[in-house]
Length: 470
Image 1 (cartoon, rainbow, N blue to C red):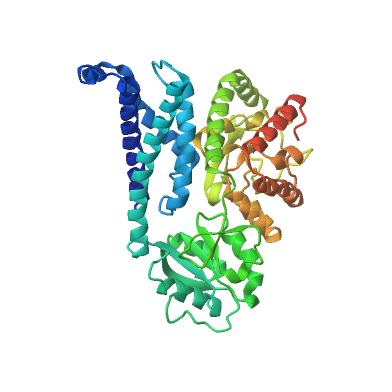
Image 2: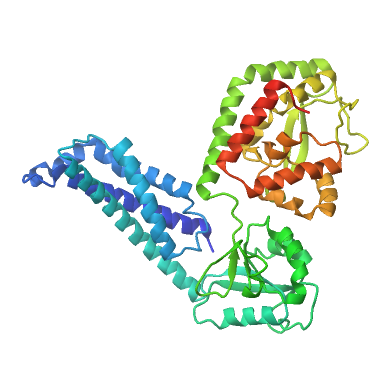
Protein backbone atom coordinates (compact mmCIF):
# COMPACT_ATOMS: atom_id res chain seq x y z
CA UNK A 1 0.00 0.00 0.00
CA UNK A 2 1.28 3.42 -0.96
CA UNK A 3 0.04 5.70 1.81
CA UNK A 4 1.57 8.83 0.28
CA UNK A 5 -0.26 8.19 -2.99
CA UNK A 6 -3.53 7.69 -1.13
CA UNK A 7 -3.04 10.93 0.81
CA UNK A 8 -2.23 12.70 -2.46
CA UNK A 9 -5.56 11.49 -3.91
CA UNK A 10 -7.54 13.03 -1.06
CA UNK A 11 -5.54 16.27 -1.08
CA UNK A 12 -5.92 16.64 -4.86
CA UNK A 13 -9.66 15.98 -4.63
CA UNK A 14 -10.05 18.45 -1.74
CA UNK A 15 -8.08 21.12 -3.62
CA UNK A 16 -10.06 20.76 -6.85
CA UNK A 17 -13.47 20.66 -5.16
CA UNK A 18 -12.63 23.70 -3.00
CA UNK A 19 -11.56 25.64 -6.11
CA UNK A 20 -14.72 24.68 -8.02
CA UNK A 21 -16.92 25.51 -5.02
CA UNK A 22 -15.37 28.98 -4.74
CA UNK A 23 -15.65 29.62 -8.50
CA UNK A 24 -19.34 28.70 -8.51
CA UNK A 25 -19.96 30.75 -5.38
CA UNK A 26 -18.17 33.73 -6.93
CA UNK A 27 -20.45 33.54 -9.96
CA UNK A 28 -23.49 33.31 -7.72
CA UNK A 29 -22.41 36.18 -5.50
CA UNK A 30 -21.52 38.56 -8.32
CA UNK A 31 -24.05 37.81 -11.02
CA UNK A 32 -27.08 35.85 -9.83
CA UNK A 33 -29.43 38.87 -10.06
CA UNK A 34 -27.83 40.56 -13.06
CA UNK A 35 -29.76 40.09 -16.34
CA UNK A 36 -26.63 41.10 -18.31
CA UNK A 37 -24.55 38.16 -17.09
CA UNK A 38 -23.27 37.31 -20.58
CA UNK A 39 -21.84 40.78 -21.06
CA UNK A 40 -20.19 40.76 -17.64
CA UNK A 41 -18.88 37.20 -17.69
CA UNK A 42 -15.54 38.23 -19.18
CA UNK A 43 -14.97 40.51 -16.15
CA UNK A 44 -14.29 37.42 -14.05
CA UNK A 45 -10.97 36.92 -15.76
CA UNK A 46 -9.90 40.43 -14.71
CA UNK A 47 -11.00 40.12 -11.06
CA UNK A 48 -8.04 39.32 -8.76
CA UNK A 49 -10.34 38.14 -5.99
CA UNK A 50 -11.54 35.34 -8.22
CA UNK A 51 -7.98 34.03 -8.58
CA UNK A 52 -7.21 34.58 -4.89
CA UNK A 53 -10.14 32.33 -4.06
CA UNK A 54 -9.54 29.68 -6.71
CA UNK A 55 -5.83 29.22 -6.00
CA UNK A 56 -5.44 30.43 -2.40
CA UNK A 57 -8.51 29.27 -0.48
CA UNK A 58 -8.04 25.56 -1.28
CA UNK A 59 -4.65 25.71 0.45
CA UNK A 60 -6.32 27.04 3.59
CA UNK A 61 -8.97 24.32 3.38
CA UNK A 62 -6.29 21.61 3.14
CA UNK A 63 -4.54 23.12 6.17
CA UNK A 64 -7.82 22.95 8.11
CA UNK A 65 -8.33 19.33 7.11
CA UNK A 66 -4.77 18.49 8.16
CA UNK A 67 -5.28 20.13 11.56
CA UNK A 68 -8.50 18.16 12.06
CA UNK A 69 -6.57 14.93 11.43
CA UNK A 70 -8.44 13.98 8.27
CA UNK A 71 -5.32 12.75 6.45
CA UNK A 72 -4.34 10.34 9.23
CA UNK A 73 -5.18 6.60 9.05
CA UNK A 74 -5.80 7.17 5.38
CA UNK A 75 -6.82 3.59 4.56
CA UNK A 76 -9.19 3.27 7.52
CA UNK A 77 -11.93 5.67 6.49
CA UNK A 78 -15.59 5.31 7.42
CA UNK A 79 -18.04 7.01 5.05
CA UNK A 80 -20.46 7.75 7.88
CA UNK A 81 -17.74 9.24 10.08
CA UNK A 82 -16.40 11.07 7.04
CA UNK A 83 -19.83 12.67 6.57
CA UNK A 84 -19.76 14.14 10.07
CA UNK A 85 -16.14 15.29 9.72
CA UNK A 86 -16.86 17.03 6.41
CA UNK A 87 -19.94 18.81 7.77
CA UNK A 88 -18.03 20.04 10.84
CA UNK A 89 -14.91 21.25 9.00
CA UNK A 90 -17.00 22.86 6.24
CA UNK A 91 -19.02 24.81 8.80
CA UNK A 92 -15.84 26.04 10.51
CA UNK A 93 -14.13 26.92 7.22
CA UNK A 94 -17.12 28.80 5.80
CA UNK A 95 -17.45 30.80 9.02
CA UNK A 96 -13.77 31.78 8.76
CA UNK A 97 -14.21 32.79 5.12
CA UNK A 98 -17.28 34.91 5.82
CA UNK A 99 -15.94 36.72 8.84
CA UNK A 100 -12.26 37.14 7.97
CA UNK A 101 -11.48 36.39 4.34
CA UNK A 102 -14.49 37.27 2.19
CA UNK A 103 -13.13 39.75 -0.34
CA UNK A 104 -14.97 42.78 -1.79
CA UNK A 105 -18.14 41.87 0.06
CA UNK A 106 -21.21 44.07 -0.32
CA UNK A 107 -24.15 43.25 1.92
CA UNK A 108 -27.34 44.16 0.10
CA UNK A 109 -29.49 42.66 2.88
CA UNK A 110 -29.06 40.27 5.76
CA UNK A 111 -31.26 37.79 3.94
CA UNK A 112 -28.85 37.90 1.00
CA UNK A 113 -25.91 37.46 3.39
CA UNK A 114 -27.43 34.35 5.01
CA UNK A 115 -28.32 32.97 1.60
CA UNK A 116 -24.72 33.43 0.48
CA UNK A 117 -23.51 31.55 3.56
CA UNK A 118 -25.84 28.63 2.84
CA UNK A 119 -24.89 28.60 -0.84
CA UNK A 120 -21.13 28.42 -0.10
CA UNK A 121 -21.68 25.82 2.61
CA UNK A 122 -23.85 23.67 0.33
CA UNK A 123 -21.50 23.95 -2.65
CA UNK A 124 -18.35 23.22 -0.67
CA UNK A 125 -19.81 20.39 1.40
CA UNK A 126 -21.58 18.60 -1.45
CA UNK A 127 -18.60 18.71 -3.84
CA UNK A 128 -16.03 17.81 -1.16
CA UNK A 129 -18.02 14.95 0.32
CA UNK A 130 -18.93 13.56 -3.12
CA UNK A 131 -15.25 13.32 -4.11
CA UNK A 132 -14.29 11.83 -0.73
CA UNK A 133 -17.20 9.38 -0.90
CA UNK A 134 -16.02 8.10 -4.28
CA UNK A 135 -12.37 7.67 -3.19
CA UNK A 136 -13.33 6.03 0.11
CA UNK A 137 -15.85 3.70 -1.55
CA UNK A 138 -13.27 2.53 -4.08
CA UNK A 139 -10.68 2.03 -1.34
CA UNK A 140 -13.08 0.14 0.95
CA UNK A 141 -14.13 -2.04 -1.98
CA UNK A 142 -10.48 -3.01 -2.55
CA UNK A 143 -10.10 -3.80 1.16
CA UNK A 144 -13.26 -5.93 1.22
CA UNK A 145 -12.07 -7.81 -1.91
CA UNK A 146 -8.66 -8.41 -0.28
CA UNK A 147 -6.79 -6.35 -2.86
CA UNK A 148 -5.59 -4.07 -0.06
CA UNK A 149 -4.72 -5.49 3.35
CA UNK A 150 -3.06 -4.63 6.67
CA UNK A 151 -0.24 -6.89 7.87
CA UNK A 152 -1.65 -8.48 11.03
CA UNK A 153 -0.28 -10.58 13.87
CA UNK A 154 -2.63 -12.71 15.95
CA UNK A 155 -1.68 -13.01 19.63
CA UNK A 156 -2.89 -16.36 20.92
CA UNK A 157 -3.15 -19.84 19.48
CA UNK A 158 -5.92 -21.61 21.40
CA UNK A 159 -9.66 -21.83 20.82
CA UNK A 160 -10.52 -18.14 20.96
CA UNK A 161 -7.69 -17.19 18.58
CA UNK A 162 -8.70 -19.95 16.17
CA UNK A 163 -12.33 -18.76 16.16
CA UNK A 164 -11.26 -15.16 15.49
CA UNK A 165 -9.00 -16.29 12.65
CA UNK A 166 -11.73 -18.39 11.04
CA UNK A 167 -14.36 -15.68 11.45
CA UNK A 168 -12.17 -13.06 9.72
CA UNK A 169 -10.96 -15.36 6.95
CA UNK A 170 -14.45 -16.70 6.15
CA UNK A 171 -16.18 -13.34 5.91
CA UNK A 172 -17.36 -12.58 2.35
CA UNK A 173 -16.32 -8.94 2.88
CA UNK A 174 -12.86 -8.81 4.40
CA UNK A 175 -12.18 -6.30 7.21
CA UNK A 176 -8.68 -5.89 5.72
CA UNK A 177 -6.57 -8.21 7.86
CA UNK A 178 -3.67 -9.90 6.08
CA UNK A 179 -2.26 -12.38 8.61
CA UNK A 180 1.52 -12.77 8.60
CA UNK A 181 1.51 -15.20 11.52
CA UNK A 182 0.73 -15.65 15.20
CA UNK A 183 2.55 -15.52 18.54
CA UNK A 184 1.70 -17.55 21.63
CA UNK A 185 0.92 -16.15 25.06
CA UNK A 186 3.17 -18.58 26.89
CA UNK A 187 0.26 -20.80 28.03
CA UNK A 188 -0.38 -23.21 25.17
CA UNK A 189 -3.31 -25.54 25.90
CA UNK A 190 -3.71 -26.63 22.30
CA UNK A 191 -1.96 -24.95 19.39
CA UNK A 192 -4.81 -24.79 16.88
CA UNK A 193 -3.28 -22.20 14.50
CA UNK A 194 -0.07 -24.03 13.55
CA UNK A 195 -1.61 -25.66 10.43
CA UNK A 196 -2.88 -22.31 9.14
CA UNK A 197 -0.37 -19.60 10.08
CA UNK A 198 3.40 -19.33 10.70
CA UNK A 199 4.35 -19.44 14.39
CA UNK A 200 6.48 -16.30 14.81
CA UNK A 201 7.44 -16.88 18.44
CA UNK A 202 6.36 -15.62 21.86
CA UNK A 203 4.50 -12.42 22.71
CA UNK A 204 7.74 -11.23 24.32
CA UNK A 205 9.16 -10.84 20.80
CA UNK A 206 6.26 -8.74 19.52
CA UNK A 207 8.21 -5.53 19.17
CA UNK A 208 10.81 -7.18 16.94
CA UNK A 209 8.11 -8.96 14.95
CA UNK A 210 6.20 -5.72 14.37
CA UNK A 211 9.28 -4.08 12.91
CA UNK A 212 10.46 -7.10 10.91
CA UNK A 213 7.10 -7.85 9.27
CA UNK A 214 5.91 -4.23 9.00
CA UNK A 215 2.86 -5.10 11.08
CA UNK A 216 0.03 -2.56 11.10
CA UNK A 217 -2.45 -4.39 13.31
CA UNK A 218 -2.22 -6.67 16.36
CA UNK A 219 -5.22 -8.79 17.35
CA UNK A 220 -5.21 -10.19 20.89
CA UNK A 221 -7.39 -13.28 21.29
CA UNK A 222 -6.68 -14.94 24.63
CA UNK A 223 -8.26 -17.65 26.69
CA UNK A 224 -9.09 -16.95 30.34
CA UNK A 225 -5.97 -18.87 31.39
CA UNK A 226 -3.79 -16.48 29.36
CA UNK A 227 -5.08 -13.19 30.71
CA UNK A 228 -2.06 -12.61 32.98
CA UNK A 229 -0.06 -11.79 29.84
CA UNK A 230 -2.26 -8.82 28.87
CA UNK A 231 -0.36 -6.21 30.92
CA UNK A 232 3.12 -7.08 29.63
CA UNK A 233 1.79 -7.29 26.06
CA UNK A 234 0.18 -3.85 26.24
CA UNK A 235 3.37 -2.45 27.75
CA UNK A 236 5.38 -4.07 24.95
CA UNK A 237 3.34 -2.73 22.00
CA UNK A 238 1.50 0.39 23.13
CA UNK A 239 4.38 2.61 22.05
CA UNK A 240 4.38 1.00 18.59
CA UNK A 241 2.48 2.63 15.76
CA UNK A 242 -0.01 -0.21 15.33
CA UNK A 243 -3.76 -0.67 15.67
CA UNK A 244 -4.55 -2.89 18.67
CA UNK A 245 -7.75 -4.96 18.71
CA UNK A 246 -9.08 -7.55 21.16
CA UNK A 247 -11.53 -10.40 20.93
CA UNK A 248 -14.85 -9.73 22.72
CA UNK A 249 -14.06 -12.23 25.49
CA UNK A 250 -11.68 -9.64 26.97
CA UNK A 251 -14.13 -6.73 26.91
CA UNK A 252 -14.83 -6.95 30.63
CA UNK A 253 -11.10 -6.44 31.40
CA UNK A 254 -10.74 -3.26 29.36
CA UNK A 255 -14.20 -1.84 30.05
CA UNK A 256 -14.23 1.90 29.47
CA UNK A 257 -11.07 2.02 27.35
CA UNK A 258 -12.30 0.34 24.17
CA UNK A 259 -14.62 1.12 21.30
CA UNK A 260 -16.09 -0.88 18.45
CA UNK A 261 -14.35 -0.42 15.14
CA UNK A 262 -16.19 -2.09 12.27
CA UNK A 263 -19.41 -3.93 11.48
CA UNK A 264 -17.31 -6.32 9.39
CA UNK A 265 -15.13 -7.39 12.31
CA UNK A 266 -16.05 -9.04 15.65
CA UNK A 267 -13.26 -7.13 17.36
CA UNK A 268 -12.97 -4.16 19.67
CA UNK A 269 -10.34 -1.51 19.00
CA UNK A 270 -8.28 -0.01 21.81
CA UNK A 271 -7.84 3.71 21.32
CA UNK A 272 -4.18 4.69 21.78
CA UNK A 273 -4.44 8.34 20.71
CA UNK A 274 -3.22 10.52 23.57
CA UNK A 275 -4.38 13.82 22.04
CA UNK A 276 -6.85 14.76 19.30
CA UNK A 277 -5.15 15.33 15.94
CA UNK A 278 -5.85 19.08 15.98
CA UNK A 279 -4.19 19.43 19.38
CA UNK A 280 -1.12 17.54 18.13
CA UNK A 281 -0.80 20.05 15.30
CA UNK A 282 -1.18 23.00 17.68
CA UNK A 283 1.37 21.44 20.07
CA UNK A 284 3.91 21.22 17.25
CA UNK A 285 3.14 24.80 16.16
CA UNK A 286 3.68 25.95 19.76
CA UNK A 287 7.02 24.11 19.80
CA UNK A 288 8.19 25.88 16.64
CA UNK A 289 6.90 29.38 17.42
CA UNK A 290 7.91 29.50 21.11
CA UNK A 291 11.34 27.96 20.44
CA UNK A 292 12.06 30.40 17.61
CA UNK A 293 11.03 33.37 19.78
CA UNK A 294 13.05 32.05 22.74
CA UNK A 295 16.17 31.64 20.59
CA UNK A 296 15.90 35.26 19.39
CA UNK A 297 15.06 36.80 22.78
CA UNK A 298 17.59 34.71 24.70
CA UNK A 299 20.42 35.16 22.20
CA UNK A 300 22.30 37.60 24.53
CA UNK A 301 21.91 35.08 27.38
CA UNK A 302 23.06 32.34 25.01
CA UNK A 303 26.23 34.24 24.12
CA UNK A 304 26.97 35.21 27.73
CA UNK A 305 26.40 31.64 28.98
CA UNK A 306 28.66 30.22 26.27
CA UNK A 307 31.37 32.69 27.26
CA UNK A 308 31.09 31.78 30.94
CA UNK A 309 31.20 28.03 30.21
CA UNK A 310 34.40 28.49 28.21
CA UNK A 311 35.89 30.65 30.94
CA UNK A 312 34.87 28.38 33.83
CA UNK A 313 36.86 25.28 32.86
CA UNK A 314 38.72 23.68 29.93
CA UNK A 315 36.58 21.75 27.50
CA UNK A 316 33.85 22.23 24.89
CA UNK A 317 31.04 24.74 25.37
CA UNK A 318 28.29 22.34 24.37
CA UNK A 319 27.69 18.88 25.79
CA UNK A 320 26.14 16.25 23.48
CA UNK A 321 24.74 13.00 24.78
CA UNK A 322 22.67 10.24 23.18
CA UNK A 323 19.16 9.95 24.57
CA UNK A 324 16.11 7.82 23.73
CA UNK A 325 13.19 9.65 22.15
CA UNK A 326 9.88 8.98 20.42
CA UNK A 327 9.27 5.27 19.70
CA UNK A 328 12.71 4.43 21.06
CA UNK A 329 14.61 6.41 18.41
CA UNK A 330 18.01 7.71 19.51
CA UNK A 331 18.95 11.38 19.18
CA UNK A 332 21.64 13.75 20.42
CA UNK A 333 20.54 16.02 23.26
CA UNK A 334 22.55 19.25 23.40
CA UNK A 335 23.13 21.30 26.55
CA UNK A 336 25.66 23.79 27.82
CA UNK A 337 28.40 21.85 29.58
CA UNK A 338 27.91 22.13 33.34
CA UNK A 339 30.54 19.58 34.43
CA UNK A 340 34.28 19.30 34.09
CA UNK A 341 35.54 17.53 30.97
CA UNK A 342 35.58 13.71 31.10
CA UNK A 343 33.11 13.72 34.00
CA UNK A 344 31.86 10.26 33.00
CA UNK A 345 35.14 8.59 32.14
CA UNK A 346 34.30 5.95 34.76
CA UNK A 347 30.92 5.26 33.13
CA UNK A 348 27.37 6.70 33.30
CA UNK A 349 26.65 8.50 36.57
CA UNK A 350 23.69 10.59 37.69
CA UNK A 351 24.41 14.00 39.14
CA UNK A 352 23.82 14.64 42.85
CA UNK A 353 23.23 17.80 44.86
CA UNK A 354 26.86 18.30 45.84
CA UNK A 355 28.39 16.58 42.83
CA UNK A 356 32.09 17.55 42.63
CA UNK A 357 32.01 17.05 38.87
CA UNK A 358 29.79 20.14 38.46
CA UNK A 359 31.65 23.40 37.88
CA UNK A 360 30.83 26.51 39.98
CA UNK A 361 29.27 28.16 36.92
CA UNK A 362 27.51 24.86 36.17
CA UNK A 363 25.70 25.06 39.52
CA UNK A 364 24.40 28.51 38.66
CA UNK A 365 23.31 27.34 35.21
CA UNK A 366 21.42 24.40 36.67
CA UNK A 367 19.73 26.58 39.26
CA UNK A 368 18.29 28.81 36.54
CA UNK A 369 18.08 26.06 33.87
CA UNK A 370 20.46 28.01 31.59
CA UNK A 371 22.11 24.77 30.52
CA UNK A 372 18.84 23.78 28.80
CA UNK A 373 18.78 26.74 26.36
CA UNK A 374 20.42 24.90 23.41
CA UNK A 375 17.60 22.37 23.52
CA UNK A 376 15.35 24.90 21.78
CA UNK A 377 17.29 24.02 18.61
CA UNK A 378 16.55 20.33 19.22
CA UNK A 379 12.85 21.20 19.53
CA UNK A 380 12.94 23.06 16.22
CA UNK A 381 14.59 20.03 14.63
CA UNK A 382 11.71 17.87 15.88
CA UNK A 383 13.56 15.44 18.17
CA UNK A 384 12.05 17.03 21.29
CA UNK A 385 9.03 19.04 22.36
CA UNK A 386 8.75 21.90 24.82
CA UNK A 387 6.70 19.72 27.17
CA UNK A 388 7.13 15.97 27.45
CA UNK A 389 8.80 13.31 29.61
CA UNK A 390 12.49 13.95 30.22
CA UNK A 391 14.63 11.86 27.82
CA UNK A 392 16.85 9.28 29.46
CA UNK A 393 19.82 7.19 28.40
CA UNK A 394 19.33 3.57 27.42
CA UNK A 395 21.64 2.56 30.28
CA UNK A 396 19.13 3.86 32.85
CA UNK A 397 16.00 2.90 30.88
CA UNK A 398 17.06 -0.75 31.00
CA UNK A 399 17.33 -0.56 34.80
CA UNK A 400 14.06 1.33 35.29
CA UNK A 401 12.04 -1.03 33.06
CA UNK A 402 13.03 -3.99 35.23
CA UNK A 403 11.22 -2.36 38.15
CA UNK A 404 8.66 -0.28 36.27
CA UNK A 405 7.68 -1.96 32.95
CA UNK A 406 5.18 0.80 32.10
CA UNK A 407 8.08 3.25 31.85
CA UNK A 408 8.31 2.33 28.14
CA UNK A 409 4.96 4.03 27.58
CA UNK A 410 6.75 7.38 27.93
CA UNK A 411 8.26 6.71 24.50
CA UNK A 412 4.80 7.17 22.95
CA UNK A 413 5.43 10.93 22.92
CA UNK A 414 8.39 13.17 22.17
CA UNK A 415 10.58 13.94 25.18
CA UNK A 416 10.50 17.52 26.42
CA UNK A 417 12.68 20.31 27.76
CA UNK A 418 10.34 20.39 30.74
CA UNK A 419 7.77 17.97 32.08
CA UNK A 420 5.25 17.41 34.83
CA UNK A 421 7.85 15.25 36.58
CA UNK A 422 10.53 17.92 36.18
CA UNK A 423 8.24 20.58 37.65
CA UNK A 424 7.06 18.44 40.56
CA UNK A 425 10.29 16.57 41.28
CA UNK A 426 13.25 18.17 39.55
CA UNK A 427 16.47 16.37 38.62
CA UNK A 428 16.86 12.77 39.81
CA UNK A 429 19.98 11.57 41.64
CA UNK A 430 19.34 7.81 41.51
CA UNK A 431 17.09 5.15 39.99
CA UNK A 432 14.57 5.38 42.83
CA UNK A 433 14.11 9.10 42.22
CA UNK A 434 13.89 8.56 38.47
CA UNK A 435 11.03 6.13 39.09
CA UNK A 436 9.26 8.60 41.38
CA UNK A 437 9.61 11.34 38.76
CA UNK A 438 8.37 8.99 36.03
CA UNK A 439 5.08 8.53 37.91
CA UNK A 440 4.25 12.18 37.23
CA UNK A 441 5.23 11.81 33.58
CA UNK A 442 2.94 8.79 33.24
CA UNK A 443 0.14 10.91 34.69
CA UNK A 444 0.96 13.46 31.99
CA UNK A 445 0.31 10.83 29.33
CA UNK A 446 -3.17 10.25 30.73
CA UNK A 447 -3.93 13.98 30.85
CA UNK A 448 -2.20 15.33 27.73
CA UNK A 449 -3.74 18.51 26.36
CA UNK A 450 -2.74 21.96 25.18
CA UNK A 451 -4.05 23.39 28.46
CA UNK A 452 -1.85 21.00 30.46
CA UNK A 453 1.22 21.97 28.39
CA UNK A 454 0.56 25.66 29.03
CA UNK A 455 0.28 25.06 32.78
CA UNK A 456 3.58 23.15 32.85
CA UNK A 457 5.31 25.88 30.83
CA UNK A 458 4.02 28.57 33.20
CA UNK A 459 5.24 26.65 36.27
CA UNK A 460 8.60 26.05 34.59
CA UNK A 461 9.03 29.78 33.90
CA UNK A 462 8.23 30.53 37.55
CA UNK A 463 10.84 27.99 38.71
CA UNK A 464 13.45 29.49 36.38
CA UNK A 465 12.76 33.09 37.44
CA UNK A 466 12.87 32.15 41.13
CA UNK A 467 16.03 30.08 40.71
CA UNK A 468 14.40 26.99 42.21
CA UNK A 469 15.89 24.54 39.73
CA UNK A 470 17.60 21.52 41.24
